[in-house]
Amino acid sequence: MEPVFDVRLALGRKLRALKAGDEGAAFLMRRVAEDLAERLSTVERRFPRAAAIFCVTRDAANAIAHSGKADHILRVEADRHLLSGGFEGALAEPETVPLGAESVDLAVSLLTLQEANDLPGLLVQIRRALKPDGLFLGALMGAGTLQELRQSLLEAEAELSGGATPRVSPFADLRDAGALLQRAGFALPVADVETVTVRYATMFDLMRDLRAMGASNALLERSRRPTPRRLFLRAAEIYQKRYSDSDGRVRATFNVVWFSGWAPHESQQKPLKPGSGQVSLKTVLSPGSEEG
Image 1 (cartoon, rainbow, N blue to C red):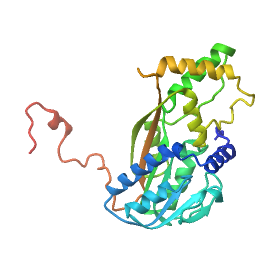
Image 2 (cartoon, rainbow, N blue to C red):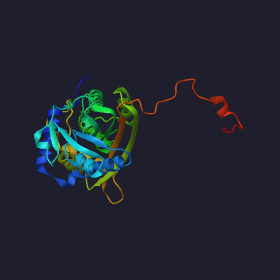
Image 3 (cartoon, rainbow, N blue to C red):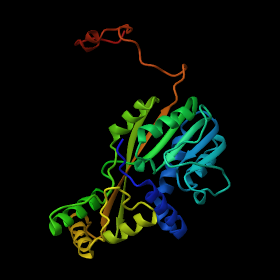
């Protein structure tokens, strides 16, 4: 699989963001962690051993702890500086799950999977680490995320230089998420999307937040040349014209794709075999038919 992201650069930017400690830029992770706790609250079972895998901050582990659903929580990160907060920690190379086969009952990953070069392979590793009937819950940025910034930068660069280089990461769509779970061998896959719209004074305030999140451009095909200031100024003009509200503030879209699946187990519900139904489809669709 051809790599798309510079994983070392992405990690370095997250470490710099952590060191800078801009609490205001943590709003998205905290919101997603709150959603995680809410989703766990609907699962009527406990998980003796849980793992928060490449979640960067301790918000995911905190959400699992506050849900009261797990007895033991392990955090897996790619750098020791990301491990803090009183939880057991394990270090791993990016996109490598250092867990034994069938060793955890719950695995979660928040807002980093969109930067994986081999997402199918990473999901296979997570599924293998789950005990039978273990649950995976993940959230990643999906298609349409930062669409306003992408279009503004593309148009400004095309206008000024006659071409364009990638400046915003590609994102998977909702259908991709469900298909990836099936491909990785998960049972009962489910995917949904939550759209979060954030308003800023200018495009530059959005870009400042992205840097503070460690989420700026880490594409391998990014331009290595310094970006002319006039490109950003023109992009900000386009952004303001196309995506502002009546009060002058501009919108930024974040589409959070949630997907979940279970490690296969014989007790799980399975689709009926073809020909095993007791009522024909023709009978159900016939006018005047009644449920008998």
